[in-house]
Amino acid sequence: MEVMIGKINSVRIGHGGYQDAMIGITFDLGGKGWGIGDHWGAWSIERSDYCEWTEEDRIDQLGKIFMRINELLKKSKVDDVNKLKNIPVEVTIEGNTLKSWRILEEVL
Image (cartoon, rainbow, N blue to C red):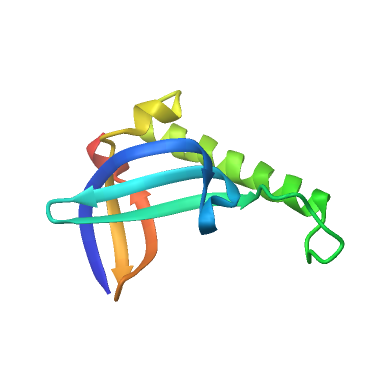
């Protein structure tokens, strides 16, 4: 496991995730010589009878994501996702997999 210090290089709300088939928030995190993405979202495709999720599940998931965004804004001391750009982060990676990341509140 490797812990690296970097920043939020970009953030956007819209389609992203698996084959851009999700709606949510996408982060580009990085530092000197490295970068990694993270997407918090839910399916944006039209639901069929074969889906294992319901509309209520999707609405619940998106509600939780927006509450997570709210906490991120509070920790970053900003009021708009566009202001998250350049906020310092600590990123934990195992192999080539993002395990977690957090705002470096102690330096804000």
